Length: 498
Image (tube, rainbow, N blue to C red; front, side, top):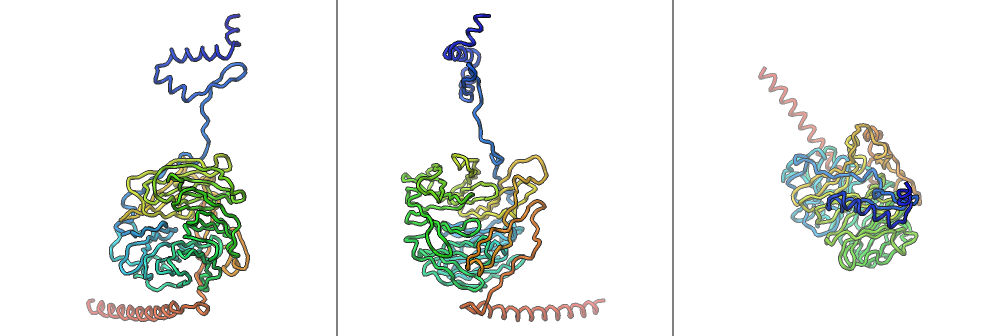
């Protein structure tokens, strides 16, 4: 007994030697290396205890991506070949829009979500621009309104009829002229109705009151070079831009002043993208001096050093970030990549935690991101992407595996709804309002009519839109009369046959 007691309370070296020889002679050699790599020895109460490596707990650790079946894709669509780093796709719970190749100008196609399968070559498009379309975005407050920016230096606002297009659209509801070079970035205000931001290759950011058809704010003295990206924060009180002069800027949109700026967030010369994430922090993607792709998280109040900076790979495609504020998950989609990486952004170091990656065989030419109110909550779907190939659009569903069929409240907190919290005039006068939230518990059902898109034609500089509306009303009247005459003729013929 004395010997055993002395061995138990002996030196650390003797105990370690005993354990080492025990493992060495008791296990086969391959198994021994596996055990020693997954277990760590810790001194505890005069002896040693063995504990497994701790894995960070997260409900999104097992999120997986899956492409839908072939019959649920949108086939035979000629996606634009323009070499511009925008999404080329916009989607909402009613429609999916994609920029397509067009001869003699620019065009994009708008499809109802249910119109899957092969799309006929003669399907109508939106083709009012005289140059290639570079960016499109649906209005968050009205699913039938979409904005487009083009190489012809103009921004156009279009109204898509219920059920989709039956004839090609050539006349916009509103045409916004103010840029001297091509317009490559568009972003609707998240909470204010009819406020649109556009950025062009003339290094100018313009804030439009779309209902009045006028530029209210013009920020033209801040950026010294090409603007790579521009986005709003959650309540639309700040704008974040990245520029070719290697500077991130946080702007006051109504004053046009720079509040915070960071020089060289990434050392490389290739394009930088940046978005606001939770807590007012900023997530940026860029390249190192050795052309390695990076992702970084910044606190704009202390822009000196990044909270974290991670190197990903050596691909050359620009990483497009999509952030989900409800889950704290950010998705990185590389232009020309065949994969989607996703990370969880938290308040704990290292702040940006890698979750997993969806991979496929074909590369992506663009990507659309469905708003939360358009997801299927019964299937625990937390994100849906619309991946553009050369000749088709393929939905990709991100799902959290859960056994229960009940509503998962931890996955679906209240999210941003389609109702605006301020009108354009109120916002430009200084009103900031948080977004109006909705619950997804019973599947989102609109309880109020979609916010009507009203245009003050008397205040607009272009009157072509109002004239076209009168022409259309006359056409409708004549068509109704023709249908009525045809019905009467059919009734007479039916009587004769009887």
